[in-house]
Length: 292
Image (cartoon, rainbow, N blue to C red; front, top):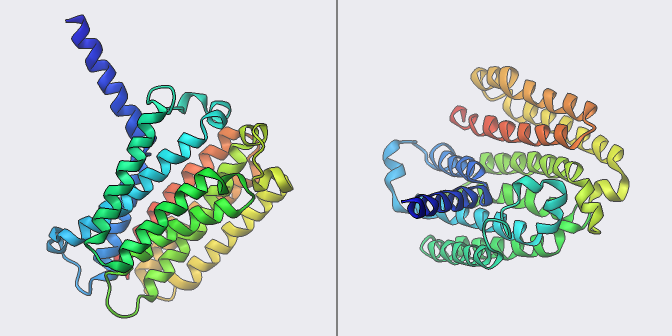
């Protein structure tokens, strides 16, 4: 009986660690983003029946699996750094063996590429390219100033663009949302670099805060956040009254909180809170799609 309980506890611990490794809440937001882009920006007439099509689920699984594989390979290469920055959150090498993590990463990548092959050659090549780019980022680019941040931000916006490949005709609104996803992701990535500056510096990483200093990086991020808010106003306010009210009541206050938080932030804990706030801004941005 005791042995059976221990096995169940071990399995539950392993499953929870696996969900933590692939950033399950982030994948839920990503899935929601893909489905909402399809419903409100790709289809001329959104409907629940459209979500029953196999194609959109193959697209969703492909994008989500690539993202999950990216999280796994990132933690695989960052074990030593993570032990300094966030020791309690380390999974690879502590609960999940490094070899198991690589197997997970490989299986998810292969499945994503296979699923993408059923969509079309453009989508297939895009997914394959994203997979290789994420590996290169985790292996090398992450430790270089700004380059790694730009890659992750690009792929964040690119995931929206990929769903847009299902659309026939112009997709100007899809490009707008891709741009917003890129910018808020860039802000979050730079905030995370400031949060992780201690561990990154200990292992020779050349992130932007290490290269030019935390103060200058913070000023740059504040500039990006202000630019983000201006772009929201420029693109969303003229559309209709509902989206203008939504931006004024929800999105703008969140971005102002982000800027104020950055001004006063001086510890890893505060930067982590700002990073989480960026996720809420992403989610709030997704919820503007029904207004289009």
